[in-house]
Structures are given as C-alpha cells and as structure tokens.
Amino acid sequence: MDPAPRRTLSSFLLRGSTQVGLFLILVVLWVVFANLAPGFLSKFNLNSLLRSVAVDIVVGFAQMVVLATGGMNLSVGAIGVCAVMFSGYLMQVLGLPIPVAIAGTLALGALLGWLNGFAIVKTGVNSFVVTLASASLFSGGMLILTKAVPLNGLPPEFGAFGKSAVGPAIGSIPAIPSLAAVALVIGLGLYLLFKHSTLGRQILAVGANARAAEMSGIPVDRTIVFVHALSGALAAAAALMLTSRLAAAMPAVAGDDWLLPSFLAPVIGGTALSGGIVSVVGTILGALLVSTIRSGLLVLEIGDFWLPLFLGAFLLAAILIERGRAAYVAREQARRAL
Image (cartoon, rainbow, N blue to C red; front, side, top):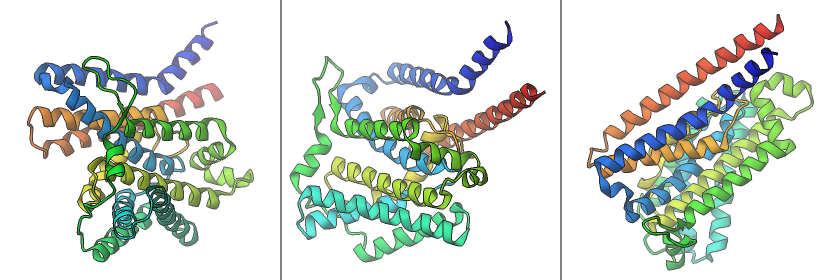
C-alpha cells in the first residue's frame, strides 16, 4: 500500500513544487517590497508592472518554445530590434494600416526565426552558435539600415492600445492592461499547443530524445525549423507590444536586454534546458518574478546595476534545481526498474 502514495508524492514534488515554490517567492517579494516602499502597491506602479510583465511573458515564450526541443535562441532580442524598427517603418514611413503593419511584422519575425532553424538543420551546427551569429547579423543589419534613428510618429491608435485596459478597476487594483490580456491569450494558445495537439507532443518528443522521435516517424528537422519560426513570431509580438506601450519605435529598448529574462522566465518556471518539458504557467510566473524584482528595485531607488545580479542568481539557482530534479528522476527510474 505504501509505494503508490510515494509515487504520487514524488510526482507532485517533481511537477508541482516548481510553480508552487515560485508563487511563494513572489508572495514574499511582494510583501517585502510593499513594506519597504508603500508606493509599490500604488495603482500607478501596479499598472506599470502589469504592462511590463506582459512583454516579459511573451519574450519568455519566445525562448520557451525553442527550449522545448533542447535548443536555444540567442537572437530573440535581435529579432525584437528588427521587429520594432520594421513595424515603425511600415506604420510611419509607408503609412500602412495598423493591422497590415502588425501582420507584416509578425511575418518578418517568423521569417528570421525560420532562417535560424533552416541554418541549424542544414549545417548541423548547434543552435547556440547559429543564433549567436544571427543575433549580430540581424541587429547589426537593422541598425545600419535605420541608423538607429527612433520613429516617433506612429499612429495614435497604436500607442493608445498600449495604455488601454480591459475590465473595471477595483479600488486600488487597476484594470487589466490590454497588453497583459494579449500575453494571456498567447499563453492560452501555447498551452493548447503543448497539451492538446499532436504537433505539441512532437515538439516535446524531439526535445526528450531526437533520435527516438525520428525513428518513430516524427519529422525532427521540420519540427526544429517550426519552433524557431514560432520563436521569431513571438519575439516580434513582444516587440509590437513594447512599441505600442512606448508609442514609438526605438531600437535601444530591445536587444541584449531581452536575453537574460528570456531564459530566466521559462527556466525558473520549470522548462527544462535539456528539452522535453515546458511549463506555460511557470513561464508566466517566472516573467512576473523578473518584473517584480525590476519594479521593486525601481521603487526602492536601488541602482539598475543590481538587477543583473539578482536575475543571474535566480537563473543559476533555477538551473541547479533543474539539474537536481533531473538526477532525482533518473534515480527514481533506475530504482523502479530493479
């Protein structure tokens, strides 16, 4: 009678403890920041935090879908830079309607991601090397073409969306920003992809064991190309959200600043670096952690140079926890095989 409860408990510890622990950390941080700086819970700061976390969530999703296959995308920020400036060019210079500009920007992001995936499967070079090189190519090329000149004449409706909200405000609790609603809709789509679709299961199978997936008939190369294209489209979506939030296309707001948060949000949320395991909810909580630390340090008037220290420490802790969890799983499987 004892083995079954132990298996249930170990399953909970392996799958549920990451999100539960992350949620508790968030609660502790919110209590600490609220006590140290009462302005942390002000309606203005909460609204700013929610709009900021919306972008961080989608940036984390852009990395998460590639991590699912055991790869990585170091060009997330570079694709974001390209998308920011391209969207501004389409709307301000060419004067295209906002829906057309959004579709064109998402298509550009998917194309750049597709180029990453195509280069990886055709050359056999590790995704780390390919996306590191493409990051320099994409961002450098875009900055040369645009001369890093911001575009501030975007349609007012586009900037207004970044400041709008849905639902009513309740007391000191602000209404849900429209950007946060967009991030949640994207998260729902990814949840359905990975939990309730054949393609999602194929992506996870490739990440768990690419050789076994190929032997079972899964098109591994096509799957890798797809996740990189999806990653590029998600990076472009995050760029559009950021551009709408700022009501301007500025190349300095994306780029290298996205790299660490893009890994931190999914990894600390339970997505495995080795592939085969993703957590959409965990990625949302991880992004909320990133934005909470950033907002808390800002309210406490602590220098921005402390932010990389905190984020790096959390990322290192998440990696060590993941490695320990993987070792525990291996021991449990070996024990049950005896």
